[in-house]
Figure (cartoon, rainbow, N blue to C red):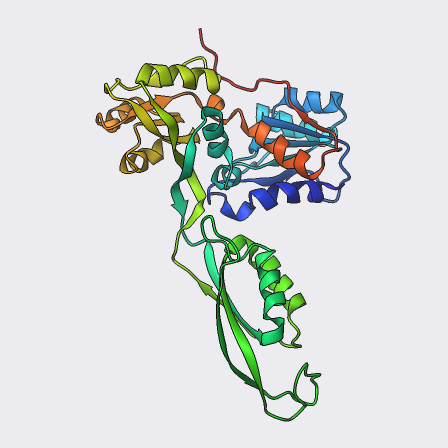
Length: 364
């Protein structure tokens, strides 16, 4: 398999188009057409990880954090970023990163944290805007089912926990083909009236291209009429953070001990206990302090994330507990997520989890 074929599996789960605009996810080092000998999954690309890839005969490293985040002007080995890239290039090892796109993806990084904590009834804490479009097309009545199925099987028609959602209206379509046409119905030069179905459904913008291609393939007409409309609705399955519930309420200390164990963290920085049971839990992998107002608005009892600054702990304002478990600790299960995504599609391929702990923070 090529790098492109491998990374397409990741991007089907977490499209690059849903990454934040400041991010740099994607293929950072290497050529997409290269045949892959093995895949090494890690949280951070470092020199030690590249050495491990060499040892395990892996020529593709898949990381969560992009080794190239801002612009590089020189490659002369003056820091760990440049040294890592130089070593990767010299060793013919490609580096790919899925960062905020897999953070924002449905069943992404925060969902994996929620799974580890046993949360139920999970929803996205801050859904993304401007990701939905409406597609409308018209086809002969006898072909409506085939066209709808083409739309649905390629990502259209999903609303929450429902799929195959569409609205259909019968009407009369008219058209007249020129001498350069081969009409499916009607004759050249004659105005034709055809009973048609108008099919309307919604689609995430990142599926638009493949949905249109599938629709055109399934549609019987030589020229297919269709419309694309932008929607202001939120896509509730894509976005930052998660809010869910514990099956049973727990007291504060008991739940923090559970967090420490389930999320394998050496230290939890937290605000004062509020003397009440915890059941509704908000969380976000990585630096999630920006979601604190959303966690409070969701009436969460606790917000678990990382990288809170000193004064931000005051912002909890005794409305919930903030639990800062560390950046690495909150994202460490991303490697496990990558492994599940890949091995589900290519179960017999050489996919390895890195044995290197790349956490730069130590605790005494």
